Amino acid sequence: MADDIKMPVSLNMLIKRKYDDLTFSERKVADLVMSIGENILDYNIARLATESKVSEPTVIRFCRSIGLSGIKDLKKAAVYGNTIEAISATSRKIQQLNSKDQLVPFVIDNLTTILNETKSLIDEQSLSKAIELISNAPYVKIVSYGGSFIVARHIHHYLRMAGMHVDLFRDYEDFYPSLREQYNQGDVVIAISYSGNSNIVLDVVQDAKNKGAQIISISAWGESKLNNIADVSLYSYYNGSGIVPGVHVFERISQMAIADMLIAGIYSLNG
Image (cartoon, rainbow, N blue to C red; front, top):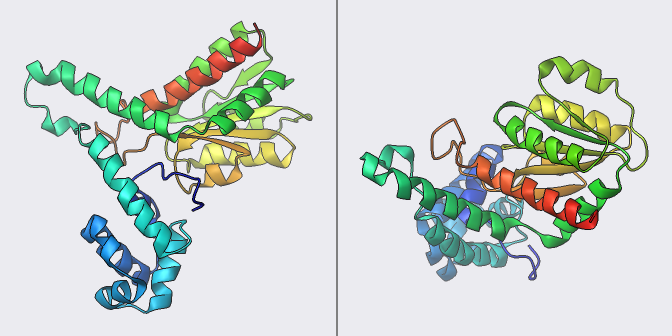
């Protein structure tokens, strides 16, 4: 992690998103790191290895497996993570809603937290590049599936209003026709996925990229198949199974905010 790049999510969230891909020994290091929090500032590689009961090279491999260059970056991420987790403390699960009197602050506080974190995740250079690519594209295809479709439809509506040539992947029936589609230079595919690992989205997007389309992703921050394919990645808020488990009704506002950033930028360029 370069010195000029800030960590956009907590260290614990970063580890959890990569945990299933870690080796058994790397998970030992992960478990220790998540349990000690900012106390990791007092640790060196040897101490982490000793208390995790692994070798020192395993500690280094763990750091690299979660996208960090070494223990120095691990410590930076831990300090930054405390700030993020303090901001996220106002975010509560639906199970903590005890009465109807709490409903308004519960919803507004959660949405405010999500939007603030979305603001911290957005890289302005990536956003500007995405706006430029879409604005200059002869043809735009928007691909999503499941709950993210509402965001795709939102973008589709406003790009059509702007007079752009735009198409929308609506459901599974569009899958095979999409694979037969041809793309020209400058064409853009906007792919939207909460996890970044939706197979139906990935198949359509990879096919489009192979045919020369530029790929813009709107997906949760971190390592995902969609972000790896994308030419430009716009990162949205991630909260595991969601404030309302399995629904992501709150988390969707992050994707919608990014959609509105794109729309506002495109409209400002087009006058």
